[in-house]
Structure formats: C-alpha cells, structure tokens
Length: 262
Image (cartoon, rainbow, N blue to C red; front, side):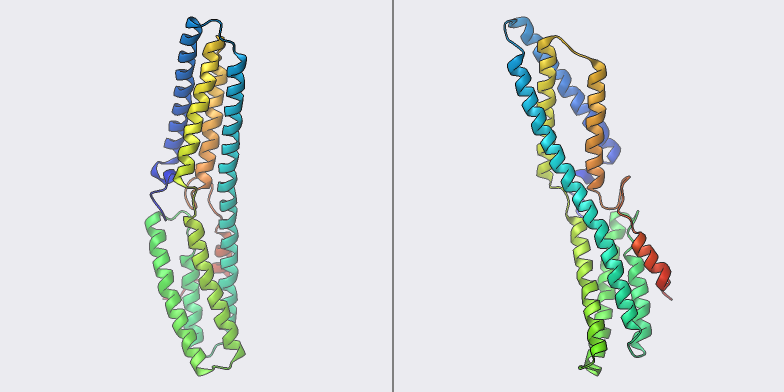
C-alpha cells in the first residue's frame, strides 16, 4: 500500500474537521474582505460578483462529482476483484482433485492457506504487506508442484486445465494488488482543496459585499461539504474507514474448502 497518499496521511476524523475548518475560514475571510470593500466602494454591484461565484460553484461541483466518481468506480472494481479471485481459487481447488498424490493433498492445503491470506478486511497496512509476501511464497510452491505434474504428464489435458486455473489465480493476485494501490492522485486532492478555498472565499466575499449573511446557512454548507469530502476519502481507502470492500466471497470460499491443516 502507498502510505504516502494524501488520504492516508490523516485519519478520517481529522480530514473531516480540517475540511470544515478550511471551509469556515475561507468563507469568513472572504466575507470580511467583501465587507471592507463594500464600505469603500458602495457603487460596486453584486450581479457581476454573483455570476462569478456561480461559475466557481459550478466548477467545484464538477470537480467533486469527478473525484467522487473516480473513488466510487475504483471501490466497485475492488469489490468485483474479490469475487473473481475467490472464484479463481475455488476453480483451482476443484481441479486439484484430479491431480495425483502426493501433489493433490499438498496443493489443496496450500490453496486453503492462500485463501486465508487473501482476506484483508480490517488488516493494517503492515499485515497486508506481509500477507502479499506470503501469498507470493505460496504461489511459488504451487507453481513448483504444477511444474512437476507437467513434467510427469506433459500431454495431460487435466494437468493443462489445472495449470490454466492456477495461472489465472496468480494473475488475479497481481490485478487485485494493483487495484488496491490505484488511488486518487495527490494532485487531484490538492486541486480540489484549492478550488474549494477559492470558491468559499468568493462566496464569503459576496456575503460581505451584499451585507447579507446567515450563520445557519454557512454552518450547513460547512457540514455538508466536509461530509462529501469525508465520503470520498473513505471510498479511496481500500480496507480502512467506514466503507470497506466486502470480503464475503472469500469468507464463503474458506467456509467451503475448510481451514489449512498445520
């Protein structure tokens, strides 16, 4: 996992509070500048400023929708990969039944151990890295058994089907790990916060310029915007936070094939 990602730098509660504070300060700073400007230039109208504020709000809404869509699509992709990998492990396990002994028992037990490692719900970043490394070791042992079987029966269709299933399982491991590391880039986070600060400051400037301001509306705006940012950050975290990728397909597989024997 890439711990350097922006959304991993702070806990979710800190992101929520920091976002709320940033929005509140930007609105208040803009309001004070607008109020000072109104005192110095009463002739300045509110219509041009209102149009500019509307344009920046539309830009901010577009950027929020874009970022939310990116996070949601990647979250859904991770859920789909859990199901695909569970199916691939299950297929490999079933085809291992047709292998001769002693490879059959060893392969089946290695697959049970492998499936247990692939359940990453609630695991820390360090444990996930360790599980990925252990998965690679098991893959090497499984492939070594497949090589032995291939050398013993080079023309066997059954062995060929097993090797194909094992290869698909290994490929899905790389795909799932890559999907877990595929996060919202830091540049998008920085751009989102920059546009947020400028937009909220422009809105506060309009409040001060027109002399109309409601703290209730401002507080609601702060809470709603901070909640949206919190949701995006939560979706961008594969296995932490409130929204987590369901590991139920892998858990169902483990319940079906059993736990590994020591």
